[in-house]
Image (cartoon, rainbow, N blue to C red; front, side, top):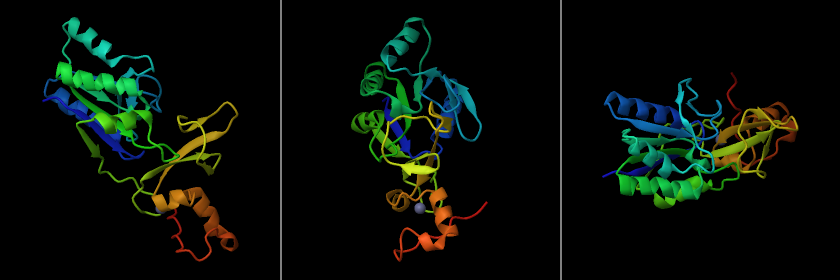
Length: 226
Ligand SMILES: [Zn+2]
């Protein structure tokens, strides 16, 4: 039976690396797949991992219809054994429904990879629909780590060095925006997410002990240097 599977996690949990590995394993068994991604940090139509691997992929615009793309391939006698869909958090709910239909009516395996929640801790639309429809949700086991060394479970948005919890849901990281502000992301444990304590803020606090923001709450360890 074909399946719709959602591999979910935080940023830095290795999901794009796993997506590339999965594609490699299928191809080594002479299976033919289609790879999709959206807003990859390396640019359009590329699926890249932080370990430096990358491959060509179809870019998923809001008006892309997965059903049409796959049927188009099949009607031209091109095999499609599986789909790998990275950055699936950015897909629309309708696109996730198209993927479910591909599994059910065409018997093709669909493997989606994505971040669960945004920098405000709210589910992305694609992730929400995947939680609702997927046959299986697999939480990725490569633990991303907070600066304190605890397991990172939350994605923080940092603008010009300051953590924010309001704003547009989708802003691709490591980019200077029109107003020349620098947008970055950092993974944090929930405790430090709730305290708005990015690694930068923690370093500042550790070098200016008189202004520790958390008095005698259980004091956080200083982040490791280097
Ligand atoms: Zn932490």
